[in-house]
Image (cartoon, rainbow, N blue to C red; front, top):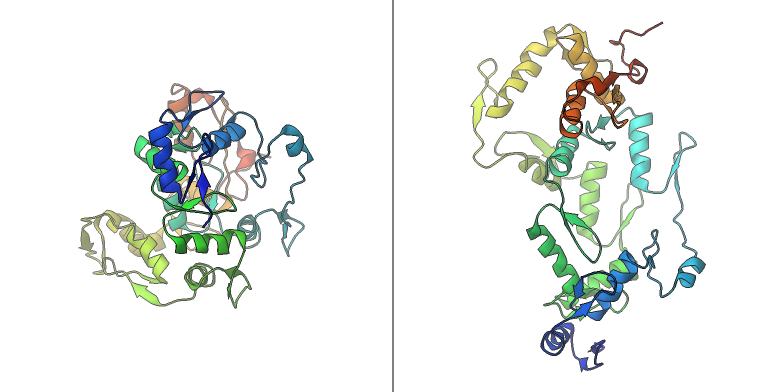
Length: 361
């Protein structure tokens, strides 16, 4: 493996670990940013930090770094081919966005997030999205090198280790990334730089670097795999990845109870939902046009249908944001506008494809 050298005194070392030890001993003050108070342990990280945060010498599309403004301006980034929808004229830069478009527009599958503009593919994905994205603390801890933000200092410190790399000794000659093990480095080069994808999905032709990723793809996209039963609640699901994701929904110490009407064992916190859906819903007056559910009041069915249509009729006139539910809009005004509910306006023209909304003629 090629020797690494100190950027300050040009001394050479066999690996990155010895280089870091040398810098700590001989150049303990580190390398201070010329524009702010950030101090890097390695000169390369100082240059990386300055180019990205202060000098604007990186391409926002392919992330390549440049030595001058002229070099950046002469750079012609090759954008990837766009993915064309086979059913309409829409095309997308990312294949996942095309899939989302097909599910929402052509298949009618809609699980929109009530807080942001994301649309999820299943109710479980929506719950996980809300839990991981919106039910977290504000991200006030930022990385000085790449500006990525974290919710607490522990996450930031773990992230900073990816920049400093004090214990990893195998460096990629293509991108400068360090690895603890040589096999991990080889795998990184094969996937990221050589683009070697040996495993091909027989269903769609997509290629993957190893069998593990191909198996995950088959389970999650093409519904292949073994059928598993959750030992806690008895629910059946296809594939080990779905089982693993499902197990995350069971908190430690969760209690299970039997339904008095049918004897089914369900989590104690879901008993009320089970009774409504299994034993009461069939007698409710208002059916949903998009799914088998029925609701007991017009207010409930209107709010439910918005989950399918993605409608956001409640406008905050303080900032121009729209929300699907009155309660969500009220929560927003309490947090950002001092609880001034007079800012909330119901725009009936936004409540589209909802048969339970009285249209104004």
